[in-house]
Length: 347
Image: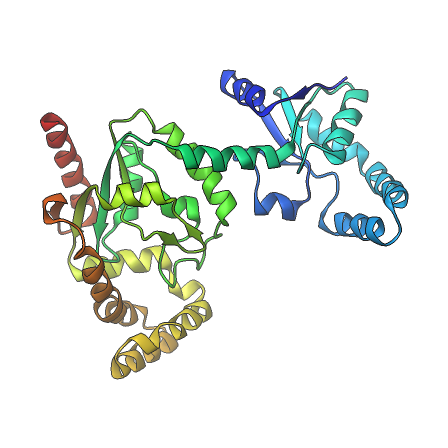
């Protein structure tokens, strides 16, 4: 017989050793929000779930259960095989810990595969995430990487992580670079997914003395940073990265790769061109249509992004700013490391 466990019990199991979480909801539900690190082995795919739901509404519960059983029975061999391939203890969950997770756990038990079932499902987990963020007292000092667009802040952040420094990659968690072009080539997260991933990262770094983040706006693409974190960032020390414009153009092109999705860049540009002086906007549009992305990037940086950045950073107290002048992003990274080591000696 399978065992029902609470969210608290699940977290203890997960922390004590290898443990696999399996979301048995449809792929669409899983993509919209799930527990970070979980696998998706659905009882119904998106179309099957819609069909059963329609029967439930139009005919009734008994017929919906009958049709659900027909669908699920046909896929049982593969369903069981997918679970048998997992080599760790496991817990299944659905939205509210209801029919789908109960069916999955029961069938697995009959086939000799033991799986716990999460009481309350992912809804319980979501409530916990919201409560934790509301009550969060995040104590590490933040070191905020800032600078003009294209200054290599994300590259430096990743290099710092590779070097063993504590970082929270807000753009990575949001699946968005934070600009009008920021979603192109990425999979943007919704608020639920972002908050789940962010909470995990905040708990992971909670005991660190210093944590590096980027100087993001409160809104990053489709998601919004929690107020407590945004306000803490605004009052934290800013490391302002300054690179030559040529290096910024190179880094921007290497990150965005506009030649891979030219139409999406043209569509995004249409949303902002009215905010740029007409002759310059026309020149940018021509460059994008011609595939001259170096010229387009240079003009966008100088006439759109740089003025916006100067306006936003003017609000930061000068006593909190440290300028990092560098010729390349590698040089800037090395300077940030050296600065951090010296700073640690003073605190």
